[in-house]
Image 1 (cartoon, rainbow, N blue to C red):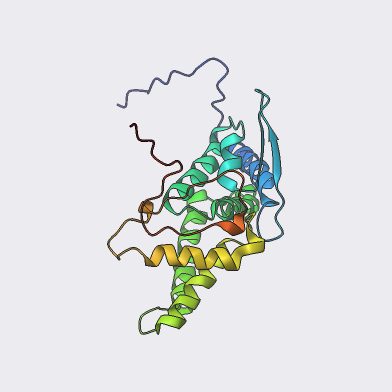
Image 2: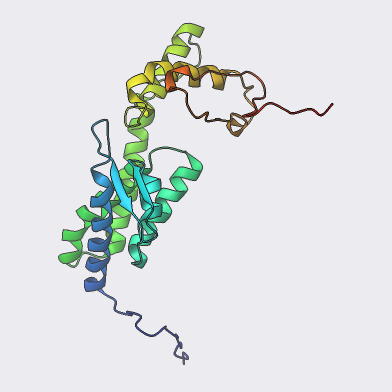
Length: 224
């Protein structure tokens, strides 16, 4: 005979379950996705976020926006965690990963409303993922055997693509070259975190330079 479990919940906690709760979770996630959706792509728009302390933030970065949103719904919070993980692991694509997750949920909603079991939908997504990864590998371009000039051109294109939705998109050619120069300064076994970015007030972005060494924001002061 099984002993019934005792679950203690805080006052006001919603313990509903079943199809209705799944739909509610999807709707909550969709509301969050709709906030960041319009920031995606080269024509993405910036968001102005005004917090309760009077602070104002203008950004089109998915991770930044998700961190500043006061999301309390447990299901919607998973999207915030996805954005944070993407930002920590990759450093880019935070908006894309949130929008894609939202689309998965959106496409699953009508099937759930028709009483299709969630596990069946999950298995289908796994199967689709395997097909997508297989196709991506077929389309991937290997740098092995490429000449120095061709290899550098491909790297600059990759860097340039990542800058299309950034504030510096107007100077992406300049910065893509700067980024590739910085990466190629490192040996293959060195951490990319060894590349530091220093901001100097009063200068233009076009004055940015690569220092192949150690840079200090202020010169040392010596007594004597």
